[in-house]
Image 1 (spheres, rainbow, N blue to C red):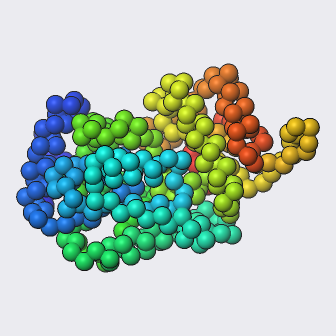
Image 2 (image 1 turned 45 degrees about the vertical axis):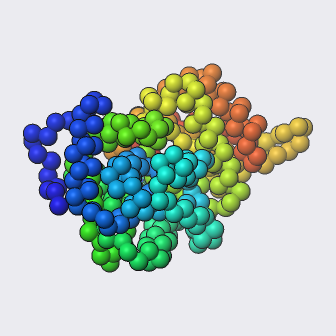
Image 3 (image 1 turned 135 degrees about the horizontal axis):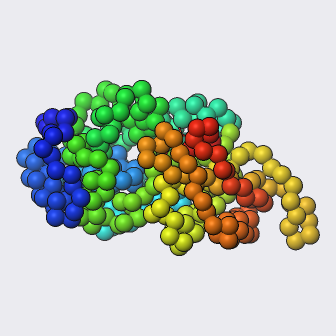
Amino acid sequence: MTSSVRPESMQRITTPQLAKEFIDEQVALLREQIGDKKVLLALSGGVDSSVVAALLIRAVGRQLVCVHVNHGLMRKGESEQVIQVFGKELDANLIYVDASDRFLDLLAGVSEPERKRKIIGAEFIKVFDEEAKKLSDISFLAQGTIYPDILESKGVKAHHNVGGLPEDMKFALVEPVKLLFKDEVRVVGEALGLPHSMVYRQPFPGPGLGVRCLGAITRDRLHALREADAILREEFDKNGLAGKVWQYFISVPDFKSVGVKDGLRYEGWPAIIRAVNTTDAMTATIEEIPYALLHHITHRITHEVPGINRVVYDLTPKPIGTIEWE
Ligand code: XMP
């Protein structure tokens, strides 16, 4: 078990060569630690768990069992990317659990944000635990802990820790990137051959679209949100904003306004664009998106996404607004 304190002498991993040295060293250590035993990992498709998965696949191949729980609140294409990259390209031992109905049924009618978060967090643990119990011969639990997780206060994390796992799971922990900062995890991820879009993915809250489908989640509004968000991401990608803006997304509130479509009165939800820059998410400023692009995104969302009839741009910095709407 390695120490949880980053030595002063540890060099920052900034180049593919340094990443390769880290990978070689970790692969040797992981093989020594794990031997011929099996390791379990909750693979969300986020940067940290993906890099840990790729590292473990390199070290112990199919002795790693990855469980990807689709809670029905993923962005468009995310679970598909996990299946494609890990299940197909890296030949991982991947268990895909589509638990969308379970989560959405539990969330039906629940509008209070913290209750929504708690339901999603608790159900995630339940689903993962059920899968773990089906596997009898697991010795280790891998986690995508990174150094800021160790440095940050537990209080802050507890609120965010949707991927938190059952406390009674009696596995030894495998945390190969726990001394790395986020930028280093990304360099290592690229050196392991993961797609750029996965490694440089913007932060995505554990409860996912659940906190962006404001108020009580309904399937039709969640679908509209997912489609509108996909258009925003596609346009930011095409227009060079994806690598520049720290976090950008759509939220859809649970009220409608009147509009007209094809000469008829048409009630729809508004899509709210948020595009913020920050270094630590404690404060945030608003990105200046060119007006022409905002017009184009508005046109696409209102014409391509059934149910949405307005697009608004949230200009509120943090403070005074939080980044998410709930
Ligand atoms: P706020 O809205 O508090 O968000 O300004 C700050 C950052 O945290 C993310 N966020 C969450 N992440 N679980 C998470 O894993 C959550 O419940 C959660 N709520 C907010 C948010 O996306 C932003 O990056």
